[in-house]
Image (cartoon, rainbow, N blue to C red; front, top):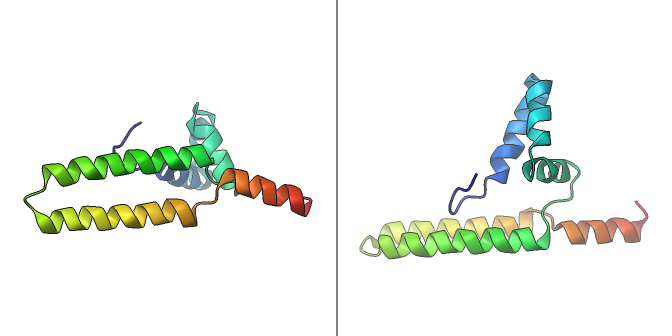
Length: 112
């Protein structure tokens, strides 16, 4: 699923979390989805996102933000809200979501 400007992984993480508490069959279904399942398993293991995926997510998000800003250019307040939310989203991806390579490197040096 592609949702311009909004990474969908968070929705699959939420679905897997809910299904883990309600339906083992649906949880297995989410974890078995190609492309999505490995991301959910990695997030559960605390591995976060690969660096390349972070870069792609931010690039796609900002492409959608720029397109939205151009379309809404006559509505300054709306453009400001879109840009501010884009900055918040970017900060979340960069600082709140672990980078897989960094986590694996830290685990290797600490012996885990």
